[in-house]
Image 1 (cartoon, rainbow, N blue to C red):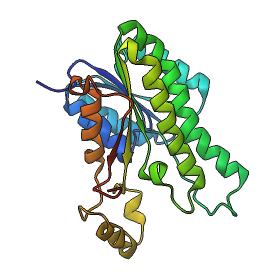
Image 2 (image 1 turned 135 degrees about the vertical axis):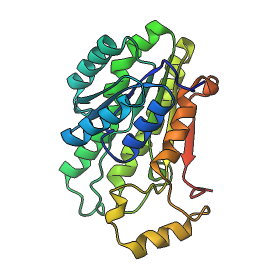
Image 3 (image 1 turned 180 degrees about the vertical axis):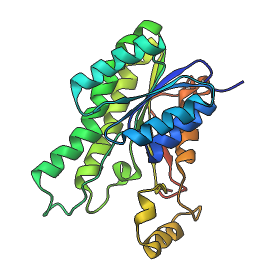
Image 4 (image 1 turned 90 degrees about the horizontal axis):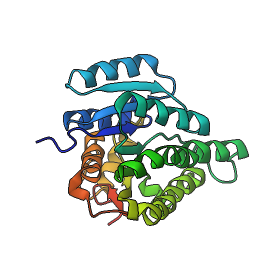
Length: 248
């Protein structure tokens, strides 16, 4: 029995990196997948094909999670196309790192809008169908940086810490409707973005992690599968650090 058989999941920002890893593992576990992307049309088409080949229903939507109306429209479309929305994974995010002295107002606002407001937009868009179904699992992607802060990332840390407070509040509001809201805080995850970084820097990061390696998108995806599945039926309002022991 696949853990997500018959469930429909919306995954934002899934054309690459962690989002793509989650989409693939969800499809392998039997979930139908509606995923969003912002600009990578080719990568999205490729992923759609890959997921459909696993025997589930999958569709990519070009949608900006930071835009309130687009988020509402997306939920309506997915409901029409798939018949239910059982899982929402808010994964879309950006960084615009700089020391506070040098961060522009625009770079602060943009990161808050894409990383934090998008979580509000999509969560608000799915709660009505979830309340009707009397079940649902919302999983929001924070970061170890949202838990402990990081120099040069005040905007990113603020957005990711905000996600934790938001998710706990949603858990309190919607628990009586059997809708669960949890957070995953990834540590250093190796994706195509980190592959471009200086090798010596990456090696020093790996050495500082108790498990002595960076995480993979699959490591994050497996945690998402657990929180999305009925195995986590009594877990809500929690933050799961998937970081190889970084915050230990």
